[in-house]
Length: 489
Ligand code: NAD
Image (cartoon, rainbow, N blue to C red; front, side):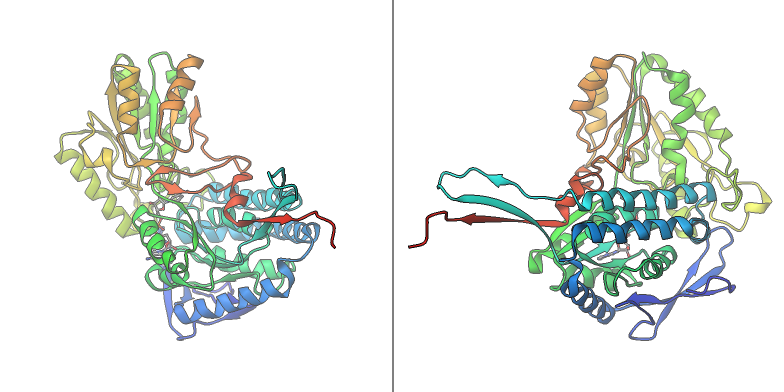
C-alpha cells in the first residue's frame, strides 16, 4: 500500500502477493472528517474469494496447521511486535479512514498487538483430554484446526475486531480469508502486508476487499471454507447463517445490541454520570456495546438526567486528528442521516430531547458527518429509539419503580449483548446480573471487553464467543480417538 499520496493506491493480499481485483474494478474510500476520497481500493468479486481460498488452503496444507505450536506462537509474537512498531502508522490510517479520534485509534492498535500476544500464549496450551470410557480401551481427544476460515468484519473498530478473530484462528492453526467492511479496508490491507513482513507464510492471511453482498456472500457460501467468524448487523448475520448452510459451515456471529445501563437509587450517581456518557457516545455511538438505554430508579431520575446531560455537553466533539478530541464524526453522511431520522422519530413519539442531536455549529466541522451526542428523557419501551439499534450518539432514559421492573425493561429487547448495573448493594448487583439476558455485564463500570474473558451475545446479539480461551473453541474441531488395548493375536 502506498500511503504518502493524496489518494492511496491499495491492493488486496492473496497468496502473499499484492494484487488487483480479478475484474480490475476499484471503489473509492471517503474520509468522514472532510468527505474527500482518500483511497482507491480493489473491488473484489467471488472470483477473488476463490483465489484467496485456494491460497489459504495451500498454506494450510503446506504446513501452517502442522507447524509446532511454539513455532506458530513465535510467529504470532513477531507479528504483534511488527504491529507495535507500526502503531502510529496504523492508528493514523484508522483515524483518517473512519473519523475515529486518534487517541482511541492508538489505544485500539495497541490492543491488536495485545490480542495477538494473548493468543500466541494460548497456542501452546491448546490440548485435548483423556476420557474414561465404559469400554476398556483408551480414549483421547485432539483439538484440530477447522481449515480455511472466513472472517467478515465491520467498520466501527476495524482492525481491533478483526484481531479478535485472527488471534484464535491463527493460534489453532487455521488459515484466513479476511474481508474488511467497504468503509474501512485500509488497516486490514496494511495488516496483511505486515504479516508477510513478520514472516507469516504466504497465504496464511489473505485480505479480500469488496462489497458484502458479493465478496462477503461468496465467503459465507464457499464450500472451501469451514467456518465463518462474523461481526456486524443482526440481519447480515442471519443471511450469513443461511448461506453457510450449504456446507454446514461453522458460524460465530457477533451482532447488534441495545444495551441497558441500570441505575439504582443507592448507586454512586456522580460516578455513573461522569463515566457513562462515554459508554454510549464513544466512537460516536457506533459501538455494539453502546449502553443506549438508561434505566433509572424514579427517585434519582431527575438528578441522573441533569448530571448525565451536563457531562454529555462537556464531551469534546471535534477533528479526529486532534489529540484532545473524544468524539469524532459518524462514519458517513448516510449514517448521520439514519441517526437524524431516529432523533426525529423520538421527538414524534413524544420523548423529550434534553441536549444534542444536531450538527455541530463549529465552522471547522461543517464539512464532516458530525452530530452532537443526544440525550432523550421520558422515553417508553414502545418507542423506536428504545427498541432499535441506532448505531449513533443517542441515549434514551426510562424510569422504573421496582427491581423486577428494571430487569423486565432491560430484557424487553431482541438483543442481549452487554450492559451495566450501578448499585452499592452487592447482593442486588449479582441478583440483577443473573436475571439479565445478556452475554456481558459490568457492575459499577462500563467495561464490556477483556481480552482474557469471553465476549458475545444472547438472543439476536449473536452466536458463539470471541476473546478469552472460549474463542479457541470456535476455531477448532474436536476429534475423539478410541484405542482398543487388547493385545494383538
Ligand atoms: P454490516 O452487517 O453491514 O457489515 C459487516 C460486514 O459484513 C462488512 O464487512 C460487510 O461488507 C459484510 N456484509 C454485508 N452484507 C453481507 C452479506 N450479505 N454476506 C456476507 N457479508 C456481508 O455491519 P456494519 O454496518 O459494518 O457494522 C455495524 C453493525 O455491527 C452493528 O449492528 C453493530 O452492533 C454490529 N457490531 C457488533 C459487534 C459485536 O461484537 N457484537 C461489534 C461491532 C459491531
